[in-house]
Image (cartoon, rainbow, N blue to C red; front, top):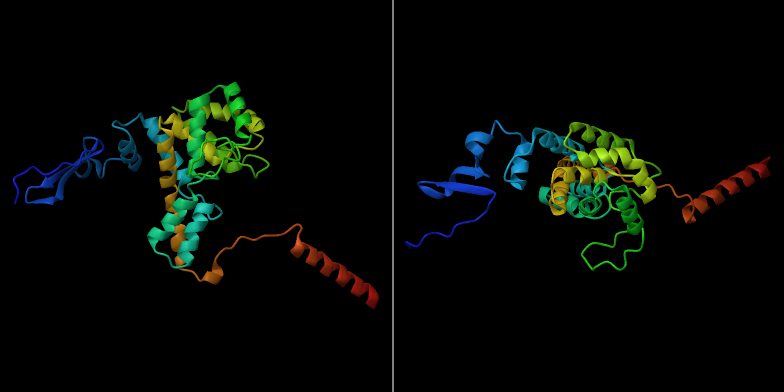
Length: 286
């Protein structure tokens, strides 16, 4: 066996000490200097561990409370969310756990209700801060054609990030989430957003949605846009996982398909013609 020293794995996040008789087994593991199994397990909150993976030091308790509250809100986007629906499709089709979660990640990564929308909204917070005029200018520009933007892996942006294009008003759940997070403290952007939500909605021409609230919360926590994007993906996985498991236990005939009612088109036309024919036939018999 060579006497040369073994190459070391370098990371600012994690450090491990091997067992004296087995260098492949961990004797002690440290996250940012904290002994994970000797001190943290049984004493630390999950959000404390999560934050230490992001930052070298723990923040104020109010910041941890903010992250935990947001994690509760994001844990299950619900079966109507495209990412959860993708995981459910995996579950009903008999896909394994990893495949269902990868489906949820793939569908939930984009610019509609997805993690990239959070990323883009956080960029807007970095550029506009709490300046209402800067936001109005940004929102006017965001509604324009994005064809001149640099080529990237994502489809062109079709609306201001953090806003919902297919709703007449801000959802009650979004307003409740914003108000609850703003009350926690250490959240200047969330408080400003709560006070100026309607003005921003007027400028955007559409209501605020939950990705916009999450972007403000992550910005208040001091996270970078790419960190907020990653956390948004992570925090929404529990609901996708549980809905996929639920579908695994069901028959495919019980799968909750979307109900679509056409207002016009061939199907609606046929229905109208059928109703007219029925009416004419009843008159004939009379």
